[in-house]
Length: 106
Length: 185
Image (tube, rainbow over all chains, first blue to last red; front, side):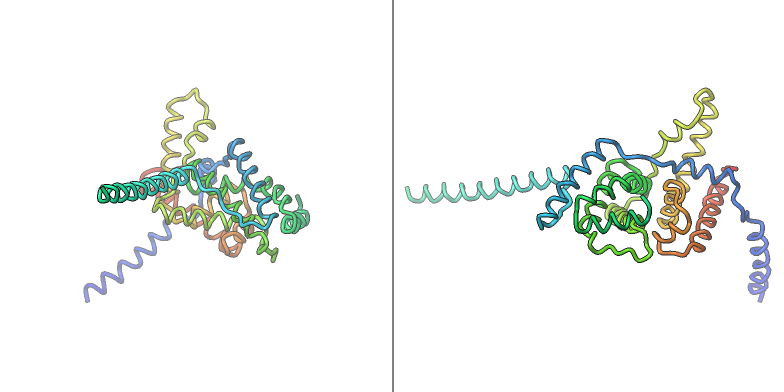
């Protein structure tokens, strides 16, 4: 009972609080938000580089080839190192077995 | 380039991929700007801008002007890539615009500069706390200078809904800042 009364009393206060909240945004505030979101431009080198890559992709597309986004440098390095390590591991295993085979023959 | 010229250019690019260069020139700055404000750093902005144009080139055949401008289609691609980027990295957005703010201020008043920077920093933090939809709206509105109708096309909402969301977004930022004792008038 008391709880219900408390809730009933609380709601009008909430409504009053909501009415007190500012509903208009000051002009200066809008300008401040605009200020921190000012336009930026890409670097000329990036723009040129992308234009070149797209021109190549366009040629590939015209030749009926599938266009693939060039892998970023970091991914390329990781892929290259992984492939190298895998090849080295396979070579080591082959070498190991060949040596053992040679020893067994002797 | 008028809307009609643009349509002609898009149609030309579908059969003659060389025409894609014109579209690239027209939109690269806007797409980069949009992505930069969503990811907050140059490296990822460049990577995602490249991906946006590569994807646009490979899917150009599927684009049809049905009342939705080409720019909205491009922004949609960029938006999806940015969303994936955030999902993959689990990062919040970082709006790195300190340099821009400093450049816009008179340097002869160091105290005023420090105060302004502090306010700008808090404002950026409040923007970062918004949900991605609201952040996207602010970037398109302020950084791209798009109208509510154009933003509506990109975000798939009505002009009225964008207007309302914009107003509520500004109020939410202001309320957030007021809670922290900062009143920007």
